[in-house]
Image 1 (cartoon, rainbow, N blue to C red):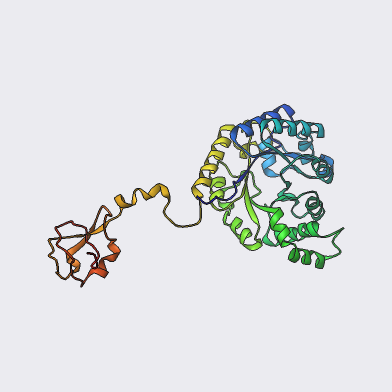
Image 2 (tube, rainbow, N blue to C red):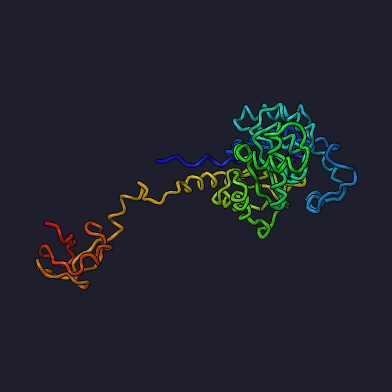
Amino acid sequence: RPPMSDPVLIIAEAGVNHDGSLDDACRMIDVAAEAGADVVKFQTFDPEAVLTARAMKAAYQATNTGEGGTQLDMVRKLALSHDDHRVLADRCARKGVRFMSTAFDMGSLAFLSGLDMPAIKIPSGDLTWGAMLLAAARVGPPLIVSTGMATLGEVRDALKVIAFGLIGQGDPPGQQALDQAFADGHAELKDCVTLLHCTTEYPAPLEAINLRAMTTMAETFGLKVGYSDHSLGQSVAIAAVAHGASVIEKHFTLGRTRPGPDHPASLEPDELAAMIRSIREVEIALGRPEKQPDPAELGNREIARRALVATRSIKRGEVLTGDMMTAKRPADGLSPMQQWRLIGMAAQRDYAPDDALEAPDAA
């Protein structure tokens, strides 16, 4: 059979669901590998480089952690050290799953550039941080760019900066240079960038998913697309694969009742494994775009289809009329689509009822 498209890259998003514990982060790697994920992804950040003290928790973060307060206080408890990341990368290598982490500041990006990762991830919140996009384009590629909260125009603006990072030198001297890079660098963008559709809410309600927007991005920019899923359950991620996603990113947790901000919108280990199994099944079922009978069904064609047969005794030489023929199983003679061709022609031989009719020019 002709080869199918490349397998969907499944990223098991550990994020900060380790709650700052290296031991739990290692356990999450084991879970992701056992579930069949391609990549397990964490988050790398220097809290003071990301947040001011006045940045308050998002509503979902306050709800899920059971308290208000600042994001800075929250993420200080969730940060892992560079040495911790090296331990995680080594464990991934031993477990047969790729290590990946999202950098939320320039120092973290520089650190991660020294680790073996399949791609550089731009989180939705940094889609409008031009300096990070430029730096990431030069550290990568490939790049996986999440587009939660974004308009199509903001995605285009981000791609302009990335294109300049891929084909230009230094800093962009102005908007015209970015526009020109976008026009000249489409081939590089196509080779290097995957856009992830995303709804930045935890959990994301179904009516806010708008999965068709993923197709809109693919058609607008001519790039590979995927889906970063914050909905409850598995169905939307599986639907995204059927809709053309080449990457699926999904949060998972060791237990949804844990105290961190992202656990309630995450899959537990058995659910992660079930989602991955379903995605692989959908991939197989998607198959090829050609509409033609598969070898698996050819054996049933004669049994399930029909042939033209006589409705009564017919003498050789009789002129065939529509009421002399009908269609019955098995398909061991002429296709019923030949009915109108036969009408008005002379029977070439005698037929008994239910005999399969033959073409008029048959001997």
